[in-house]
Image (cartoon, rainbow, N blue to C red; front, side):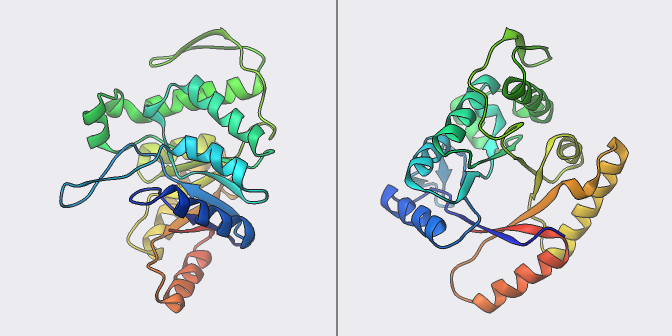
Length: 258
């Protein structure tokens, strides 16, 4: 089993830039393996109040300039929010800014309210869009020219330079839970981030289903690391340690503390 690695995440909502910088410093100097933000344009509380939210990929560029050691990424990027050539170029830029420390987190996107508010298209076909987007981005990162005639995206002899520092490209983390998305994970992911079942037992079962899908598509399940996020209020450390241990026993070696 791969070693246990810890990440730290501050979603960037209802906070300040100064507070975010404090989290980045703690992650970089405190020995965390990776550091994460999130990718949303709005956060609406239960009372209907809109809370401050910063743009996730702009923050990643700032993290690249503010840290020296820790790996980092967005947990996870909403694929429908950007055209794949824009996202691929942003990822390469951040990879270069950081000296090759980017972890590329992506998902199909789920926030219906954001799509409605801003008129973002693609929510109804988000899994298919993610597949095509990943095909396009991987090609842009690794090939001299990219041609893709898909259902959603179209590239014709497209160039993309420079290439990422990391070869063949930054590690791909995919957040997923449903059956369709598990097939996307099996085809493309270096790391699967569980969409968060009700506990370790449910996550273990979800992981078992991913193993089955990998076998169906001819992928060795052991080549995909498993990750989970913990919501922690900073109080009961013993409870957190116990939970970390239970998830590790279930094979989740990448664990992120929110």
